[in-house]
Image 1 (cartoon, rainbow, N blue to C red):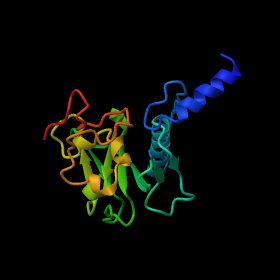
Image 2: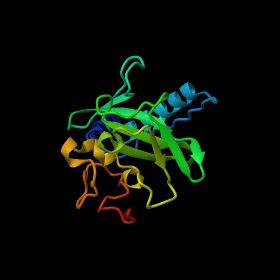
Image 3: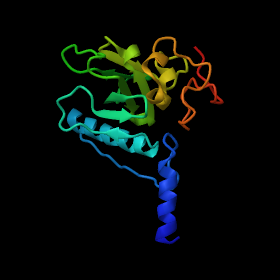
Image 4: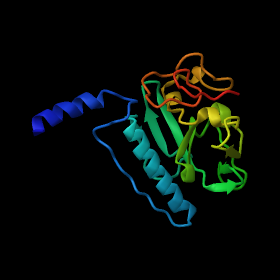
Length: 195
């Protein structure tokens, strides 16, 4: 393939926001010590690779003074995303804390909490309307009845206006057909979450 035809292919692929990029794959190998700061950095790098693969526009704020780690813009406004890693296991559940000293997830600080269960390589996209006021979130990827299971791979929420997400948000139709990764409750998914 010559350079000119490759350039045309790239321009075509960039327009497909929400679809995985089959021709330009970024492989990321992030390794972290048993240090929470370094583990957080590795989780953030994995998030960046994931959203880039899905062609979701993303920005990283300078420094780490804010409660959110990234800003995504998918045409519904800028959403502040707090990225967390679930590596602390209790039985079959994984615990994710908002922070230390009783901190809670708040709408003033973020719009989404995105959790990566590292050992399972599973992502959860939870809107702040669900996580608001909680200090700990529990995830159980092996249970279809777990509280947050309907948010597994719910990247479509990033393409929804605020009023289209929140409590009781099991959709009748797909939230975003632009996203080619189907969340656990998507009507277009073959195996669906059932509460």
